[in-house]
Amino acid sequence: MRSIEILLVEDNPGDIRLTQEAFKDGNLINNLNVVRNGVEALAFLRQKGKHQEAPRPDIILLDLNLPLKDGREVLAEIKADDDLKRIPIIILTTSTNQEDIFAAYDLHANCYITKPLDMRRFIDIVRTIQGFWFQIVRLPSE
Image 1 (cartoon, rainbow, N blue to C red):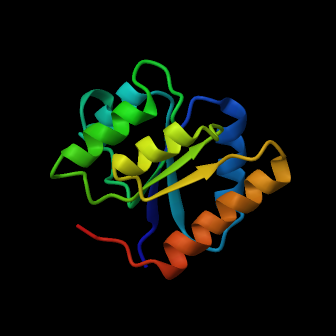
Image 2 (image 1 turned 45 degrees about the horizontal axis):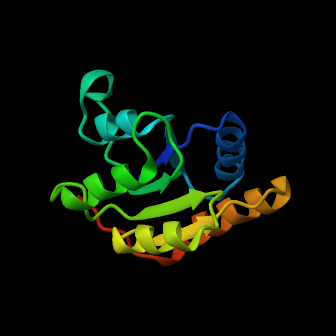
């Protein structure tokens, strides 16, 4: 069984650490790649610059509020790209704004999850993502 490739696009060091811990404690073999802004996310996905050897992710966890290029712009570019548009994208953000939720789904996000403020709940949500997307859902493969 090959490892699951996950791309986490997140600029908050605390959320990165919690996500890493939650995936590390999971029952699946996974490789969690982390980029901290929208520009770097697109470079990773397109294997540009220092990301020339980057693996194609099976799934993307995308924050909306990112430096350089925000998550909405990243989502729009990914879903407009024929080579990338089938990669499932989970919006994982602090925003509860209905406009953000509608915009994310209008841009073809696969789901929208609001990060809880409680550390334990955040870890539970990441584990639920892992269980659903990697044990129940059938993902497209190259």
